[in-house]
Image (cartoon, rainbow, N blue to C red; front, side, top):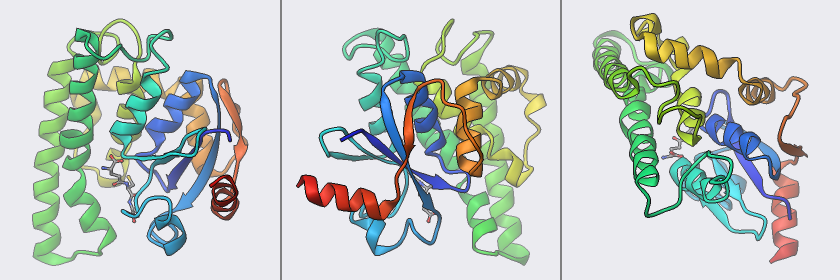
Length: 235
Ligand SMILES: N[C@@H](CCC(=O)N[C@@H](CS)C(=O)NCC(=O)O)C(=O)O
């Protein structure tokens, strides 16, 4: 079976895994999962009991959830493309550290803001959530700006899976309006460069359901029902 990424719309953190697959260049398929309706339903929970995207179904039928795990799985095959590093090397530790920061501090900073938006918070509850989220998002941006410094990419002079994951989270500022990325010129520069990348444009088109031009190994979309049927047949 061709490896298949189950990605969440709208604007899921799975975006980074789509970009990573494009950069990797291996054959893959995508399976679109609407959030929150489908992601929390019984059918999807057969794939990931946590009810969250992304999940990668590998070519041998294993299911890997959690962006960190998916990116490290892909990274192991992306070393010769400079997307990742061999475990046991300083490069691997630096990439793992950056991914961990992005997946915990940077991603989690948006948590209170998403909660306020998605749960229709009002009044003092909304104010408290937004103030807390704004402080966390500002700090995460300031910290990441220092870590980036004047480097071209998050880890240095070439792109890695950390940049793929970054762009999927960084765009969330457009929903919450709590920081102006131009106050973090290094992050703005990185953001603009990634937005112009063909694989990032591809991932945006996929999420929007528009015709998307792959420069990687994209072999089309599969429905959740078909994927579950194929998994059952292969078992
Ligand atoms: N720790 C997980 C978090 C995954 C996660 O929070 N996914 C969100 C989308 S970004 C989701 O699927 N939410 C389910 C929902 O909105 O109902 C990871 O890093 O992959």
